[in-house]
Length: 140
Image (cartoon, rainbow, N blue to C red):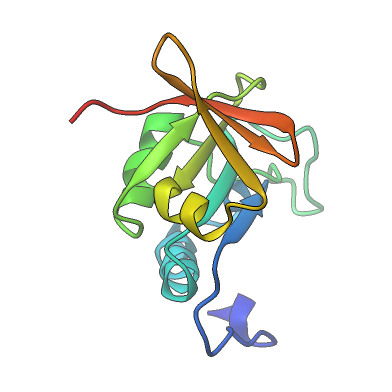
């Protein structure tokens, strides 16, 4: 794939990957290889993905967001590479956020993250004391 021609993947596994506003720019035919590469270096990841057209048009006349799908599609696609994928609440209704294997991430990063269960069964996630995410743990 052309995007890897000047890139080198890490040789060792890493604790966590944060990927924001990237995947919607990857053409669909390259997405499996990109997700395979990401999942090969860590199963712990945070993704934020725009689910709408971008405001910018590329010089070739195409929209900058070439892979636009609803959150459920992204969750299903990510789950093919990362066994467990939890969707997080997102203030931007035209975007989707996901954590893969969140319990493992919290175990490894206790000094950064704090997870608090609320009375309605939601989990609020705090980083350095600031609430950044809220999600409902799936039943089962």
